[in-house]
Every structure is written in C-alpha cells, then in structure tokens.
Length: 325
Image (tube, rainbow, N blue to C red; front, side, top):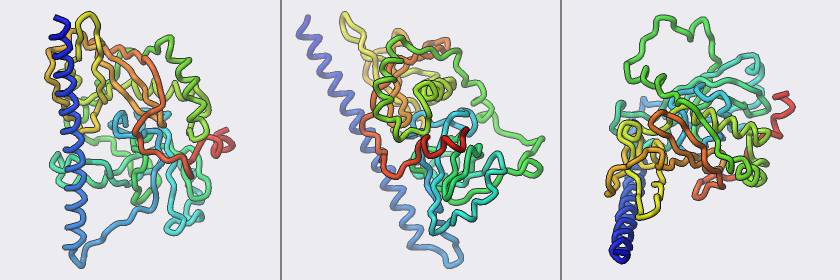
C-alpha cells in the first residue's frame, strides 16, 4: 500500500511539473509572438503613423501581474512612483501638478499576453490615480493598478468638469467587479512575527513607512477577490496525500495568462479553504486561503523568489516622508 502511494505521488508530481513547464513555455511563446508582431509593425510602418516612446516608468508595489487590482482606486494604499525620463520631461514641466488631486496615466500593457481577447490591440490604456506628492522628475501616486516596470506614454491632470460623466454606461461584465468584495480578511497568529522578520530586508526600498502600513496594504488588496473567474466559479483542485493534506499552491490571476485555469490531474477538492494562493507585494510573497463564504485567512509572508525587481535607484518612503507629513 505504501509503495503504491509513493508511486502515485511521484506520478502526480511529474504531471504537475509537466503542466508547469508547458505553461511557462506558452507564456514565453506568447511574449515572443507579441515582440515579433510589434517588430513587424515597425518594419511595415506607414509614413503617416505616429510611433510612441515612453516618457517614464512606474515603480509599483505590485511586483507581478498577480494581485494587481482590476481597476484603479480600488486599493487606496496601492502606491507607485512615476519616474519620468529627465531628457524627455524636464522637472519644470511638472510645476503646479501637485495642485491637482488626481491624474490620468496613459500606459502600455507591457506584460500582456492576451493578444486575441476583447480588443485586437490591447497595448495602450488609461487609468486615474491620486497624486500624493511631486518631487523633481517624480510623482508619488496612490490607488494605482499598475505593475512594476509599466512604461508610461503620457499624463494629464483630472478635470472634474469635463472628465466626469454623470450618465455614463458600462457593460454588465464591468458591473460584476463591484461584487468581488470578500467577507473578511483575517491574519494568522504567526503572520505578524513573519512580517517583522521580512520587513528588515525590504524596508529600505519600500514605499511604506512601517510594518503596520504594509499589513494594511495587504488587507486592502485581499479585501477584493483577486482570483481569476475560473478559480472563483470552479476552484482549482487540491493535492491530497494519505493521512495528510498538502495544499495546492496557486497564483490568482495566474502568471500563465489572464483568467486562464491551470490544468490539474487530481480529484475534486474536498474543501476550498485548503487551497493556498500566493500574492507578491514589494518583493514579499503572501500566502492565503479563502473559503466558500469569502473569508480570507492570511497565513504567512516570506521573501519572494524569482521576482525581477531591482533595488537600485528605486523610490522609497524616506524620499517622500517630508512631503507626506
């Protein structure tokens, strides 16, 4: 019996590893295809076209696509520093911008791999974010839904008298986002000590002043169900072993493509709260579960691995604390 169990576990691990390898291969293929299509468009560019060059880059608290809000301003504490290229945007051009409360940001979906969904060219978009402070060639923003490294094409101050439309309409699938609030967010007893250990290694490059503020950010992000549609309506299956329950490890919104479900050859899950999801914020990996009633339990936090994030020339809270008051 024990030998059969070990054989099944080995077979299961092999299948899961194969699925993960295929998923990563698909992501690389999608990214290469996107790069090739953009290169082809550049080579065949019409003389009357107007190619755009980024004027700045976003340094965001969201290390990866996983967990980045679906809409701006849903997470008030979600901070980002917009770093303009001084050669293209001199600091003098930002004078007076701090007198506005919000700003429109036109940016590039540089990590998008869904080339065939909804729009044929989902490469540019516009969001609204709150201006916290302006300093030199930098803007500190909050309420963002931008991943770290996002290229920015242009910015524009938000003008309520012309930008706000009272009788505007949206499709039903957009309205559904308002129903994604979870019932509660609770932290485990071991979470606080784990966060204290991790904070020492990230605080110098963090946009947050303290552990408590970082905890508040985590709570705000997880107050919305950030899982993909397939995960919400048909949760991923769990990996179970005899005499012990081994939770499956899953990234909501997957790094394998927007809303795409990860195949798993195992039997149906007996309890959704056994599934462990992972969220990356500011080089920290947060592990949590969510039950059928929408109650989130934040279990642990640890330094994130395999997250491309350079600490060189990064904005941090120390640079802004005098302006934040």
